Image (cartoon, rainbow, N blue to C red):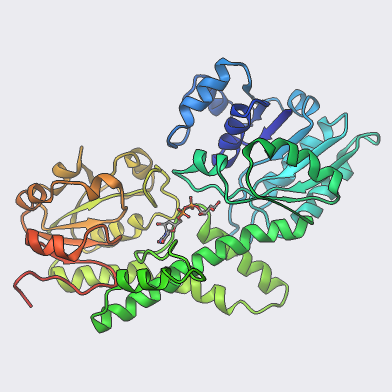
Length: 438
Ligand code: UDX
């Protein structure tokens, strides 16, 4: 099938690469000429395992092309995906200006019947909005339909999630329109759900808000654990065995960041409020999440004592492992607070350092690896649960540090191991481990 994808951000680029890998002819369009040139040279604007190889393979085979010119790409495509950015507006709502601009350009370029698919995460009702823009700008003879096909991929697992999604949701105005998308996705042999357009739009927000709720819920329980001597890892495990609850997304820590959860919860909250509906749950989920880092910083002060003039090693900068994405990364808030308190911060991340430099204050020193980062440190702070941090030689880390004190914001170690190694170890929702000292 001839497919056009507008926008080569996370969702657009991965979607384009995966559709081409499935044997379709895909043209990816982006306004940013520099990015398009980079992609033509197989240079990825994001770090995503497996993506570069896939883009290279499909470009070589001629199934995947990149262009800045929307006209030909839309004219030759049966299905056009809108996968442009939907950034948050200052009031928490979603800025749909890029979606609107893409819809107008599609309308102007369309000749034959075209299916326009909203892949970007957009508030319920956006399908109608896109439809009205296209109606206004299209040639009288052009026919089209607007479909919602939300994307559920996770950064760091994007390729796997695209090939093996838990479900494919297709919100279409009529069955015949949904069939074209069914045909496109059929080779994946995954569960597909056909709905009306608004339901599909809302499924995406409801799913993300529910996952965010799970995270905030377990973090609220972690706070109770810290006051009672209970261990949140056991609590989460015990809850997760109940199949109605499930074990996923019950990792207590510094809360959720990234480009989706914070913005999607805010957007849904804004929409529900605008509709005059109660948003107590969403307010609470957001509040618990916002309180995570200030609480962690208070614990650093409580257990470290004087921070001024101390060397603090920070392991992990990205908002989560296997990505270089720094959007809403909790490391930024923690590092700023440490710098404000007069600490000397030395940071290391396996892939996010270059992106981190764009958002972190100038005073941060960057180390070449985790061991160099730990050297001479008065405390080590774990911000991202990269696998390599779990597998470090902690005897070596302990010997390199000035004081064997770890603040673990992601619970990557067991209390037993840290006790055996002689660390003072402060984690989330678990009793503080102060080896030999009270
Ligand atoms: C999320 C959704 O999972 C995905 O379906 C959607 O399409 C986009 O948003 P992503 O933002 O890439 O994906 O990351 P995810 O792995 O879901 O993690 C989001 C945040 O929640 C991270 O900051 C992570 O550290 C945090 N998290 C996740 C927890 O704190 N605890 C958990 O148990 C799980």
